[in-house]
Image (cartoon, rainbow, N blue to C red; front, side):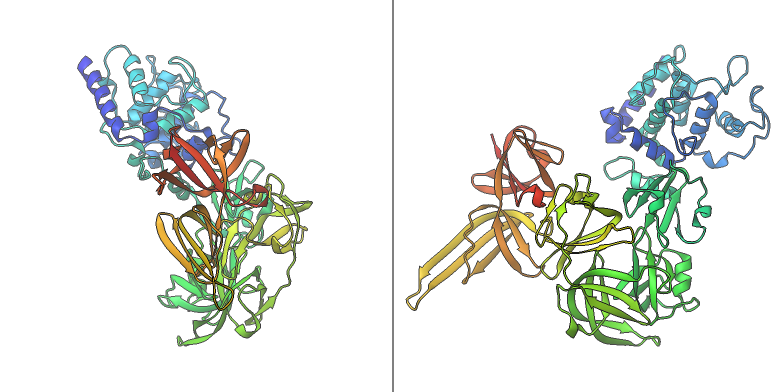
Amino acid sequence: MRKRIVAALLAAVLALGLAAPALAAGTAVSEDEAAQVLSALNIMTGVGGGELRLDRTITRAELTKMAVAASVYKDSVGDTASVSPYPDVARTAWYAPYVELARDQGLVMGDTAGYFRPERDIRLSEAVTIVLRLLGYQDSDFSGAWPSGQMALYRTLGLNAGVSAGQEDAITRRDALYLFYNLLTAPTKSGQVYLTTLGHSLTSSGEIDRVALVNSAMEGPLVAEGDWRSAIPFQLNENVKVYRNGVESTLSAIREGDVVYYSASLYSLWAWSSQVTGTYTAATPSASAPTSVTVGGKTYAIETADAAYALSDLGAFRIGDTVTLLLGRNGGVAAVRAPGEGSTVVYGVVNAITTDTYQDANGNTYTDDAVAVTATDGVTRTYPFDGRYLQAGDLVRVTVAGEGYDITRMNAAPLTGRVNDDGTAIGMTPLASDVEILDTYGTSTAAVVYPGRLAGVTLSGDMVRWYGLNERGEVAWLILDDVTGDLHQYGVLTSVTEVSTSNPLGGFLMSAAYVYDVGGTTRTHTSTTTLWNLHTGPCQVKSDGLTLDRIYNLTEVELTGVDGNVALSGNRRYTLSESVAVYEVRDGNYYLTSLDRVTGGDYTLTGWYDKAESAGGRIRVVLARAR
């Protein structure tokens, strides 16, 4: 008997080498992460409209339901029990089918008197025993008095991370939350990570793939129109979690025409408001069975059967029609509407005057003038249009007019004021919860900016090219002029040659050569007309996407440390760019490295920023020198 427990513990220790890194570390994840994972798996879904009530104790019946939900038998539980599985478990009790299945699969047993005691708070030792049975361990694997062997293996497997209850204590729902989360990352008796036995995947680093779990729990889509809320299979109240366009939001922020997904187990809604209006010019592979369509010069995958039918030769729309696509979370077509049924206005910047190829109703292709517009949602759309009336860089409004488009050049509309610290207002003007912000540089470079990126920035002068208000007086669209600096590249100038000599014929002869490294790639720029008065070291490279416009040196600040996304310089704090470039300097040469490698105390760090944070700047480059 003693050999069995020793062998089991040894096998578990060896299996730990195959388990997720978090398990090996023995540290608990956050409550929110554990709750999201267990909710997505329908193991712990909360009570009272999504509330988990983690401080409350949990009964033997409730934990048995969790165990069944966390087992490979979860889909076998019936609506009712076939018989009363124990004298004190009525066949009609809500928990009877779970207790019956758990008993039949050897997960639970009654006490010495033959009773289950469903309403009694469960002790940690009992919960641990059930979880170990899920992992494939039998009572015969342990020697000695129960539960000493089970508790030893519980600690060895890391099932105790985040659990505060003692062996004979009644556990709380928080203890159960962590116990079952730890179960998912623990190795089974045969050495397989438990979550994978349930048919779910791990990331490449061996961690729980939360994205995949949430995706698997998400249902939909449906369009927010009419009585759409009645189609959601749970009560919509103040406890429901709502996300709109990837940002935490509220139920009242969902607008008609939004594409909505939902999860009863996560008690959550996700809404996307992206719409595209344009000419339906092509269907792939065919109009009889389209899997993707081209509208407004851009191709979109079709996400739903309803959208595929509507865009097929059996549906309401034909190639050559003007349509409005309602796009889902992956940018696919979730639904199709006739123009006027949804928003048909796009604001943006002319990216290029070009030509495009279209397909007529007979399947014949033709080429026509077109204008490419990068809209405030970041999507570049191409419209048939006579480009003589516009030029790259123009601000435009695009609206549907019958079977064509009305593309109107807009005048500049500057807006000044400080963006507050939570990114919800510019001065006294509030930002809409779904505000679309586009930062631009030159005529062809643009990118979406989220409000939080502008927090604390003072917008002045011509930093705002144009803004538009919604019906509530909130800024709903905002086009900036190179405010964030995030559109540019950052690296180091490794060599600077600048020569200016007198020209016997008058004036000066100039020659410049600049060698710079961006992301580990070396480039050279030469000029015979301009000297930029630069020196070697960290730099900013501005480009229109095709040709280099200008290189600038950055400003240095000595750093005393790095804390997350913040660089410290004594009592001052500087925000690091999300794509900060880090170089180790050795013998006058620059070697691209990572922040993790140089923040252990063995290096002296200097940070280099492009402009003050109040103007949108960030620490763009960090140089590390060995102490």
